[in-house]
Structures are given as structure tokens and as C-alpha cells.
Length: 173
Image 1 (cartoon, rainbow, N blue to C red):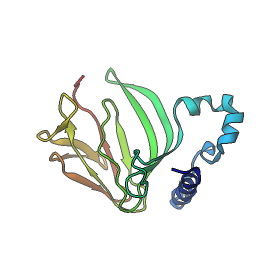
Image 2: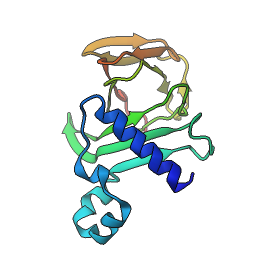
Image 3: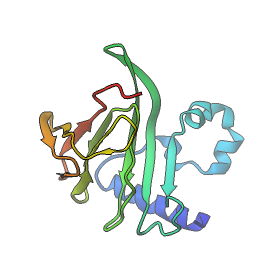
Image 4: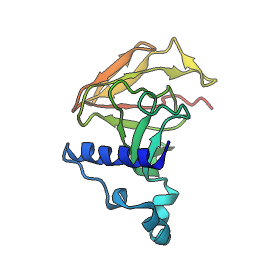
């Protein structure tokens, strides 16, 4: 992608995010040159990989297969029941008819909050012990703090204001 296209996506994304009354941390608005010149004060931001990610998954057609992310927090380790859980807080913007490929995290807890714009559909699977899609085990998740169970491959639809959380519930590796 050209830098001018990335810059335009960031400008549009800032406008979109702010239209819902959410304001990003100051480093979201900084130019790369400023960060390079003042890199010592940006050490944590750089080490935790905070900031903008405009991803086209190598397909070179961002408008069809892509995602705009802004990472606010990343890499904070929280002890819970003797498990270490990496936690990240990201703003994800998916445009109309834009998809992003199926993926998984070996160890991660995710809170996904649809803060506005449109409905969000997420197809859910567990992984088998080898990391492949498990077509037999139901998926357990919380939606607005209530437990729900989905059939493998079933989609959950989040409307603006819905919150959901999913996690890995068994040790596989």
C-alpha cells in the first residue's frame, strides 16, 4: 500500500472513532518523524507495538480484505488463577463488506466491544489439540456478561453496545 493511502485511512479512522465520542491517546496523532526524533520518550509505545496497523494481509486489496487497528494497550501480563494472560486493547475498524481472515491466539483473552457504526458478525470455532478448527466442540463465550454456547462455525452478531468475551479454556500445548 502507498503511504498516502495509509495516511488517508488513518484520517478517516480518526474521524470515525471521534464521531462516537472516543478520543485516542496523544501518540495516535503524532507523525513518524516526531517519533523518530523523540524515540527515547516513545520506548514503551514502540516496545509494546502500540499505534496504527493498516493491514491488507498481503492481498493488496485493503478495501476487500483488510483491517484498520489502533492498539492502545499491548503486552500487559495479568496473573489470574496461576495463568499468565496477555491482554491487549485495540480499536478495530472493519468497513462495509470488508473481511479479515480466520485466526486464533494460543493464549489470549479478548474483550470485543462494538462501540458503534454497524453490527459485527464473528464466526466462532475452538481449536483442536493440533491447532486446527474443531468442528465438534461448542464455543463458550460471554455476551453482555451472560454465558452463551455456540455450535462450531456458528456466528455471533454484536450490535452497537454489545460486549463479548472469549477465551481458551483448556491447556493444549
